[in-house]
Amino acid sequence: MGQFLLVDSRKLDGFEGLRQAVHGSHVDVMQLGRGRLRGTLSHIGIDDFSLSIGTFNVGMRTQRVSSDDKLIIGMLLAAEDRVAHWSFDMQLNDVLVIPPLLEHDGVFHGASAYAAMRFDINEVASLFGGEPRLSDPDTWRSRGHFRADLETGAIASRSLVRIMSHLRTQKSGLTRSTADFWKRSIVECIAANVMSSLPTDDNGSLPSTRRLIRRAEEYLDEAGTRPVHVSEVCAALGVARRTLHRAFHEVFGLGPVSFLRHKRLCAVHSILQQSAPGSTTVAAVAMEQGFYELGRFSRYYLAMFGERPSQTLGVATLHTAGNDTASA
Image (cartoon, rainbow, N blue to C red; front, side, top):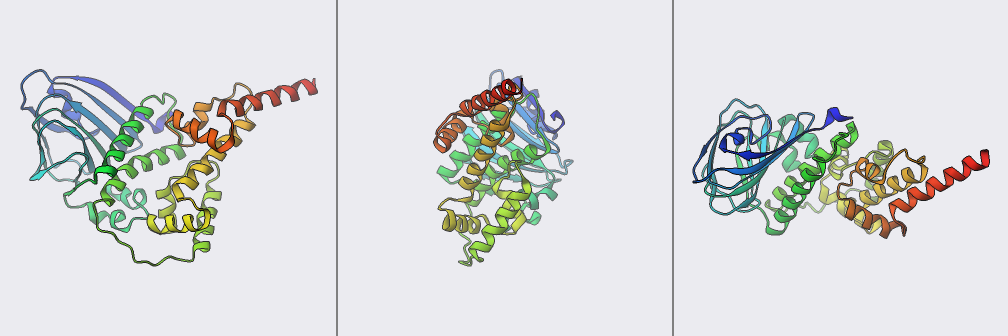
């Protein structure tokens, strides 16, 4: 399983450590502020996709040469002073796009934190599927700067940090299906932030609601018990997320995100209920279904089923033990 997840996390002691500020991409770094640079640098690699989060305590100048053929999309997580990329003055949670083979110049005037994802631009169509303005590779071929919405940006920032924190603890790695889910979860944080800065694009046209829901459910049935991200459904059906949300809310009274969460909760329940004693743990099953905050997962589960996941697993264990006794 581990081949789908690479983890690298270390403390920084000197500006040289930031030369790999984005996983797989060399950056020339010069320290601007006084004092010894301290900080942290974490990378998550999922196949050729990576998420990097860095923090540092003094001003820095970063330059990236045009030798990298990957797309980099970054977000400013924290800054105590001015941050400028090219001619853009960044504000908290703003999104920055560095296209393939483009030189980049950034200046951090004080302690800062950032997140950056790096991947092949040809993956844009699948990872941003369902959002026509984001799923076209040409959208990302020129440098860009997206001003964050205060609320959406704060949510995106917290989510990226939580995802990074969670995946760093997954010593057993990821399966192929969960690897895709986590890539989409990371991209979703950035996508939601970018979309909030764009003008509303609502044509008012809604395909037959029942037909759309049926197609979505058929896709989910084919996926089986693996976790499915809402962006994957949008890409498969060729619809915008706004359209899918309206359809699901009209039929179920739930948005597609809530519907998919309920579906994943049901999958966890069924797996726990059918598990043999000692064969698995609640945490392992929750992770396989895309839940990375166990506290929040437990609250969802309790509200949904009226019992804790450990109770479901315990009942399964008792049933299995009872069957073994009867067989004996």
